[in-house]
Structures are given as C-alpha cells and as structure tokens.
Length: 147
Image 1: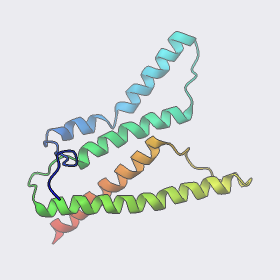
Image 2 (image 1 turned 120 degrees about the vertical axis):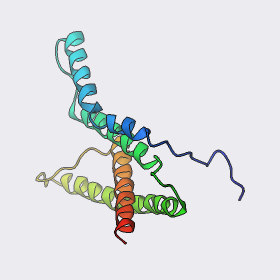
Image 3 (image 1 turned 90 degrees about the vertical axis):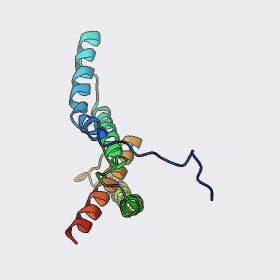
C-alpha cells in the first residue's frame, strides 16, 4: 500500500505539550463563563450537570489527544510501534469501560438506584478513549525505560 497523505498523521512538535496542558484547567474557565453569561442574560443558572460534564470531558480529551500526538524527545521506530500498540490497547479498554457503564445504566433502570453512571455521550467516549490510549502509551514508555 502506498503512503497516502490522507491517512498520514503528522506528529506535533514538543512545544504543543504546553498547549495540551492548557486544556486541563480550561473547563473551569469555560464553565464559569457559561454560568456568568447565563446569570447576566437570564437572571438564573440553567446549565445542567450533563452539559458541565461534556465540556469537562471534551477539553480533557482534546488535551490528551494532543499529548498522544506530540513527538517524544527521541522519536524512533520503537516509539512509533508503542504508539500504535497504545491505540489498540486503548480501544480494548474502551470496550470494557463502556460495557461497565452500560451495565451500570442497565442495573439502574431496573429500580436498583444505589448506583448510577455518567450519561453516555460522545465527549465521554472520546475522553475515555484518549485517556486509555495515553495511559497505555505512557505505561509502555515507562516499561521500556526501566529495561
């Protein structure tokens, strides 16, 4: 298969790590601005918990995705292989993580309201996936550095 530009994803330079780290406190500022604008325009707060969670998940997912796609100090074929393995591992963990959340929702729908899970949204799925991939990537890099 020839190397097609549409599937070739360039890695970000190491300076992008600073941009990625800005996305972790960003939800606090965004939610505060949303609440203030809501109070100013309507006189009350009408923002609900699912919206707050989605803003939080989306910002953290973007930050993690940038970190995943940022070059390491020494980028070589082994790190590229580790990065690809991390994506496979992340999708595997996502399958089980979503299964647990769905099971919690299923149990909660039968009147057992002792436990409830977060509402399943695209932002939650992206956060879980990027978190799993980043954790797998960092773990594998750590294991390699210990050898």
